Length: 408
Image (tube, rainbow, N blue to C red; front, side, top):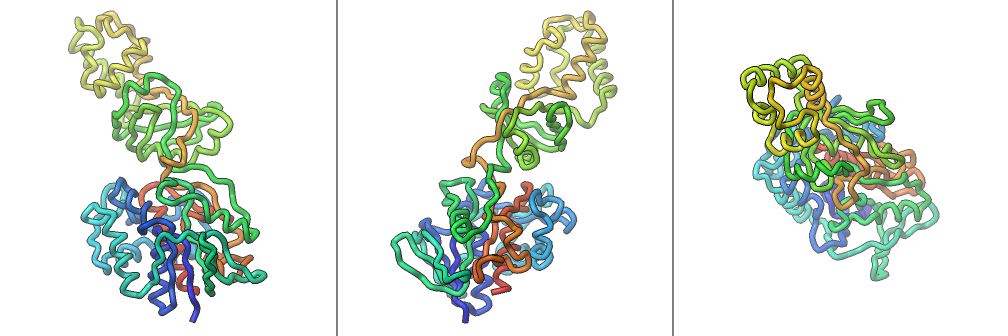
């Protein structure tokens, strides 16, 4: 009977441990922290958006890197399989906006607790505070692992489920990349993804904490639009964040390494230029003798209104009847294209995931086993696969874990 050694007690590591033990295999899980699932605890702001209840086409379309590699894993164990799995473990679930799936309790601890309880029931051997320092090899076959205290542990299968580099405080310190390189695997360069962005304009700081719903964000590289999406975002002391921004970072992050990017926010995407102009014109006609600053109060949140008026497109003190058609049109265009300059992504400490990782060209997509080292498997975020926000990255962890376990 194969003996399975799993490095990393995050989402993928816990899942592969459960499915390995369900097959009656002797299963050992090694976690360097004092408890399991530290990163899972903080996903979805502690609520744990653990998958997405979308159709398969949307599931694949939400993968940003190496979508085809996941074809077998997703089809073998899909998002609804995951929902059923946790429901069977006693986790009541709910579906929210964007088909995001959460525990009904809004507690990530329910997901970790369910996996922990199942591992205990299946007699998974759990080794906490056990940092793995290297892999044990015999030519091109895995033989086991070496712990930091230089204890050798032999095994027939070794699974690397160490995560990436995001949220290093949770234990994601890039060990998996070191293990992969040590046995001649190519590791694709990493960068933060699903991460907030820094903006150069000083006036952004004045809107810190302001959330905008139902806006459209467009990003340009040398005047060519390279990203556009609709959703929710928030201003911070350094720039912008929120679901819309995090998703954008997955698409345009590589472009930011060379130069800054121009961006615009359409604050009224439901209205055309003409419709918005008519709306403002009605407000102005109702208050012809008022100052401009006193007739646009219903259009924008107060902090945003103040910043826009400071940009002096129209003098806020100017009487409405003195405003020209050209000035009004310029103001309309500004609301449909509020300008920003994105200078860089924030670092790994604020990134949801890591882009890059172990090259999937050297991994069997059906089994997650290395094509170079027999008995060595890579699953989850350590691989060069990543997806948008919405539960899709955890789905990659679950699906790749089950694909590996079923092929031990």
